[in-house]
Length: 261
Picture 1: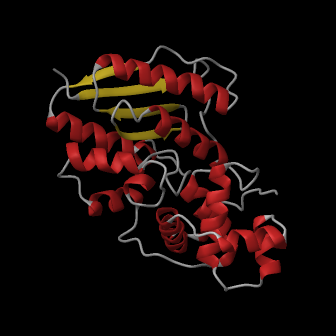
Picture 2: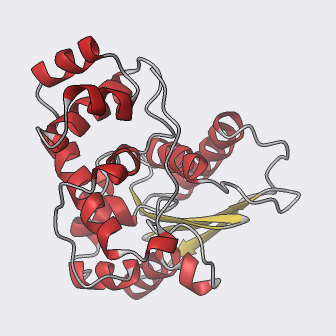
Picture 3: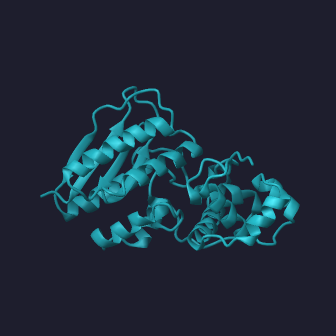
């Protein structure tokens, strides 16, 4: 009986699945939502293909692959269809561990100089940099207990993560990365939660008018946001993202994301 399955997905035209930070966040949302029932352990994009490591049976692995394909085509507006999914059994504990590492190391394996925050993988979720995929951290602790934080930090390319509160010109990017959102736009519950957490992180570091302009809301809306308490896990994730951005070379940091009321 296999311990799980290694899934690989690619488009028929070999196009890049998610080329921008916004699309990488949407892709992460798709995979993390569809992978929950398949006991997702890891996923990682390598420009024109996507790897997943699951700890489930063959039926659930196939169902997960199909659901990711359908949802990704819709959310990312992909023109091409997917080729038949590659679904390979994971035979034993050593194979499970090696597959887990391989999936997370797609950026290095293919020599890619993109996605410095590893947003098209669940590495941020495993390290507390993102809240939406925290369940994968629990899966890894349960099924791969020998995976340690230092090993994950090495894959990320840093020696440690420490929370930060700024600089303020990076707080929107940090919030979008922590919440896996393409922009601070709209009235969804996810955007509301992200704005509340951002406001809590910023605190009194700037004026209300300046902060309202930065996040694209009115001053009245800002005061309403300040009256709400931000989600603790998301607040911590934003602070860790700020700490990570401070460690990255300036050329590697993502550009400012769009936002709107």
